Image 1 (tube, rainbow, N blue to C red):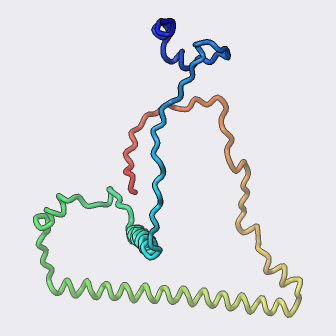
Image 2: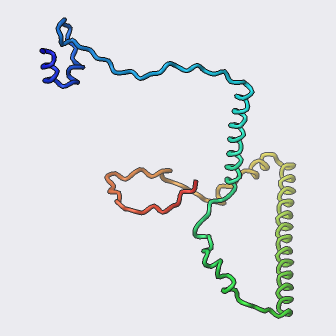
Image 3: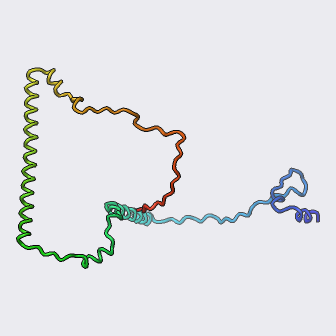
Length: 194
């Protein structure tokens, strides 16, 4: 009777959490219900089957790696450089029918050949001039070395007067104190290519 009236007045959590070291009726302890099963016995598996499973996993991972390497060579598309599909579809409609006379075509081909020959001669002449200058420089340095080793060592030193460069200032600018940074809002439109 006394316990029933006590249980009705106190919430159940207060009764369960109460722990008084007296031999009275209020010293009640409750443990949570444990829902457990006995452990299952491990079945013995054939080592050959285990090896086959590991090989399958390994092959699957290798296949994924090959696929990723194959896709890694492909460049990410740049939307600004892509041709719209509408223009590709309208290509036949937009194509102009241009007929060039055979004489004009021959003239263009001969002009291209003459231009290529001219640029080739110009390039060869530049290389020859550079070779002559380097040979004369090496010859002069060899003659100078025969005369005086000290003069030769001074001659091969770089000349700082040829390119007068003076750089002053910090390599990184320090932050400006009490700078009110602008609170700009923008919409991030960059696509994430994974």
